[in-house]
Image (cartoon, rainbow, N blue to C red; front, side):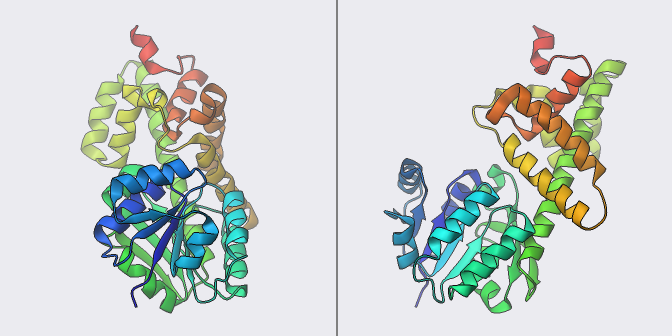
Length: 308
């Protein structure tokens, strides 16, 4: 019998994943959607078709065999898991796509499996545009038999590649996810410092950007463009919210500390993120590190103000 899929949590990444599950997942039954803000689920369902909005998370759990969920932080994840396991979850497969601390993943695994359910951690790498285009990188960890049930919805559906931890503790997936996100933080920090120095030294940010385009096409060029265009403070909604970026930085620093080391570039990046938060509040974006570095160096946080 074909499984009934459900998706809980419809933020930027969750919306894109749900859309691609409907469009490319060969679903024989409508995808069930649930979001705390019901209007968001209603709006998404009207756009993607072949989906239904569950009246409650209990309703979604009762009707689904495979439940994907993607929430913003550890507290939200644990609260939702606690709510979900109050229902009959025997033999239901739960797939967490959130970015959380590995210890949170361990707690989820324990709660779900103790209640008779099955659990796979599947954090994903990629910006909202990648979620929308179905080109995320999926990191899978858990029992091999459970991972095999999830894989049909990964490569070619929500993602372009899989990193597979077959029969490994689910927390290995979130450890890799947290560590991987430090590379993004490091990249943005390096770009911000480089562009500020290019401006202050007289080299010019345009020339540095040309070098980046030639040497580092892809994410480096995309973030460089966002910085120079002023997109890092002009968006109505951040692409990588400052609070989520700081949450990831805290997790990385904690993992490092627990293992007798430090991630100094993460510590520096988090200092800049504190400046982003102070300037922009919850609307701050990871790319705003550029503005924080500018402010530290005596330049306006908003780079387009220089041109007025």
